[in-house]
Length: 150
Image (cartoon, rainbow, N blue to C red; front, side, top):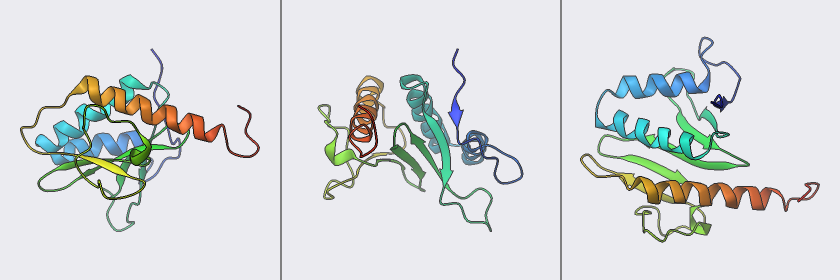
């Protein structure tokens, strides 16, 4: 089985970004943690080469920061709020969404998000397809950058 790649830099007392995400899930200890864990697992199964990071952390709060998943660029972030878990796709406006999963941040020209609320079902097949489409978009655009070979 492939080992998950992560931003190998140890942060916050030697913890890797993946360990920090594990800690965030444990800290939440409710439906939000379960939702974050479930979507994280789906992302990792869809792309064994995904890189996990924690970004935008505040030094004064070791549990701050936002989980980020990347492959040839950012795929999405996973933010938790009191009433929802929001997965924001960095290039969501350019990602085909035939199942209509995007239900938030629809007015922007770049990002799109999916807000999950307590008790909502996750269409894992449609979400997996959305993740794979976002990765394919990242790979195709990264190959078009100057200095990159197609």
